[in-house]
Image (tube, rainbow, N blue to C red):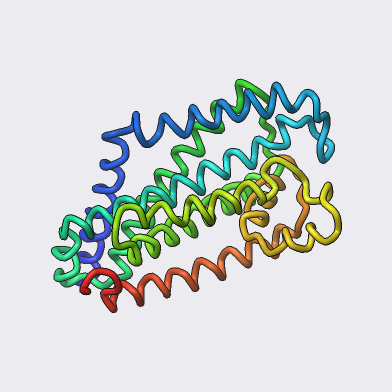
Length: 257
């Protein structure tokens, strides 16, 4: 009986989340696709022709996995942080919290909603990439696993951000001052082998570097880091952040104050 109740609660939250961003697809799905197209045109065609090959591939091919992953990261994060904070701001989340449903079910519904949006945007960007360069996936399993795990990780991160946020301005702090710098410095547009030894070592502390390079390995077959170590690290982060988000939700952090 409990399993059925939990499933109904989970599926209801998930359906609500998916309908939320698909109903306004012109604001949630189209802009990131257009933005990534501009990246392909400016960095791939215009600047890439001057840079030349990188990592044994033309520059357009090299940056393609990074741009796809960047779109997945930003959209899976943005969907959860904006949706959950809106529910908290409107006090509608209180109706869910008083229901006989554990916090992990509520958290899972919001997270999977963010994952769905992230993967949908990533798929659209992948289709657009086909107009600019060839796509030849070398390791399909690694590609699918790392993109899903990355979407899950940043969806959980968006949930935690929403819990701590007290006003709408707070939900923009992490994307602006944390996600954007880490993404641009995470090997999306370059190989870390181009950096001096000191900065190569510093780059290894950037978690997005591991996600981008593992995804690049899945598509192109090349990577600056060990992809198995990267996948293990991502899974550890998912478990830790999920347990943290669940604990914060059960404690009512940022909700019952």
